[in-house]
Image 1 (tube, one colour):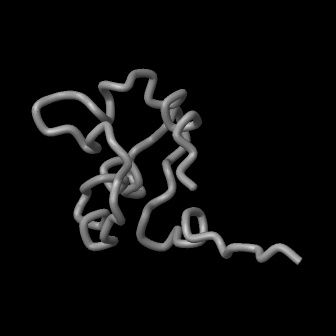
Image 2 (spheres, rainbow, N blue to C red; image 1 turned 120 degrees about the vertical axis):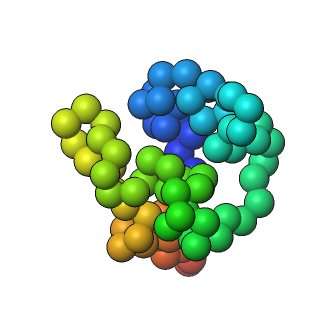
Length: 77
């Protein structure tokens, strides 16, 4: 599940991701994203490119940081 609050706190404004003429994300439940688009800097890949910084820390890249988003589901017993 996408941690919206964490990202919103870092971005500082809804406009950062949802504003402008061509927003990164529409303000609606999103459909599945393609990794090729992320690698090309679209959607999450806009910030998760391995170059963009949050303060002094580089934000992890979408390419190679697979398990940060694709966590294994733990089945209830």
